Image (tube, rainbow, N blue to C red; front, side, top):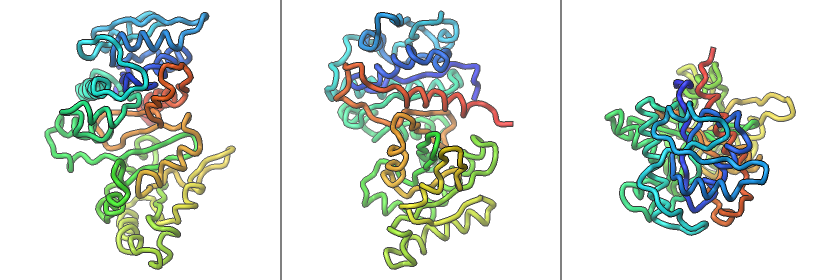
Length: 350
């Protein structure tokens, strides 16, 4: 990653809180946003800036034509690169195909810019999966950011999706979690727990975290079943699928252990009050198993990182919050943390 390049922040769903938290990030965290710009919609960002402006701080929204223009802009403004034709902003808090299409196009543009080397990283404000589906082709093909970015990166590299495996990592100051499967029904998530999927998750996690941390990560693996199966009493996935993958990964040189009972392993991997964690990361078998402990520690601190891509992407760990849109009450802390993590992950490790 070339951190001399700007960072693009995608608009997210314009009917949700994405534009407002972006506006607050520029207003409240100029040290974090000094080399950032918004890949989005000028009218929507101007409306968001009016929503969050105070008597003391009113930042102008300025139009830029290329990413590098963001590095030349004067301080105290919000640079926006217009994606699409523009027009009147969509209504706050209402699901719409228009908002879904705009959100999807912003992500597509930023991903392609990152793959071309024009930006250092992309930070994605929340989009709405139902709005993506309403938007039609090509956006309705993807349940979320991760799947869309995987497809775009695979197409850019000229390889199949299977040859571009990715994983979702949720992280905050206390805990890191990587998921074997993401946005699928629970039954499908259980079926997705195979030797190959666990092994692939371990490989991606080991390689990505080694680059991030500068050393081989200590990986803990959660079981799928209560008590990690209790020796086969509550299910045999641990014995027949998960443990063999752990053994194979350890034999290849990874620092990995488990499977551990999923109701206790996250506590062992949590760094708190100056006490070092026992593990650097936990592999969770499905979406909610991993996200509940991270979000319980504070949605305002959580950051979503996509591992395995040939580009750097982070995101706040929350959704579009249609009920808060337009009120100015949305918390920008997670977005600011995502910007900070993008910059941190882009720094070379000594």
